[in-house]
Image 1: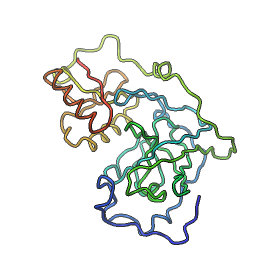
Image 2: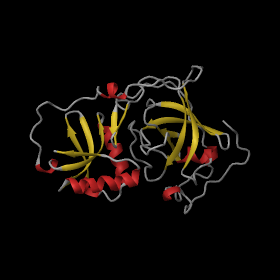
Image 3: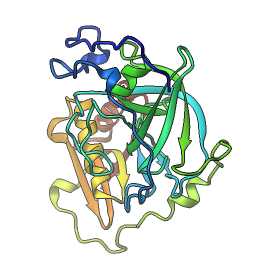
Image 4: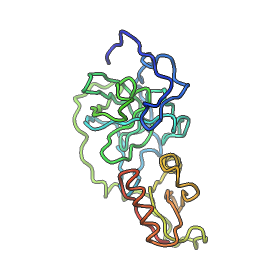
Length: 275
């Protein structure tokens, strides 16, 4: 990790912040002085590493810590999520050194390097995301600040797994069969009870989770990303599956219109479910 000879002062206000998600007046005086995460041995979360589905795509998290190195685009998330529950059940702290990743084990540690300036940080993965197409990892506000891309919103990075107490030769994570692994998700009961009236109709499905904490964290994420969703956003439970959906809608055409609006906003098109 590089050293900083002249500590930078975090700007307090923010017309220049990406999507106006900066810290407002609450930023610490010297973000560069906040220490990186310190890798240590921790048990893997009991539920946060189960397969899940978001916006029509299946994700199969790694269930063991293993060598991993990947290049991709890093984004960051700030005060809209500050204090909210992460997929690990912990509260998100935008001034901590944490990250969200779709498939790395929770918790785990990675070194993130910005090739444009050579700066690196070590962060602890405790959340799921990002779910925008083409993004590899979501960093906390402070981690992104230290890597120098707060004003841009995203930047190319290299992400390398750190295994506490183990020195390894890092290689790309092995490919997995997401369909076979995703089949391990619990299925709803074969003969479910009749659905109440408010659960019948046409819905836009954004995600399906075996872990209710993951479902709630994602529902809260969607509520902030799609502030127009309002009372349409709900979590429908069937057996052990928790489905985050919008609806019900009066017709398939209305649901398709909402799905297209989400595609424009988030870059992916969700599924349509009729019950």
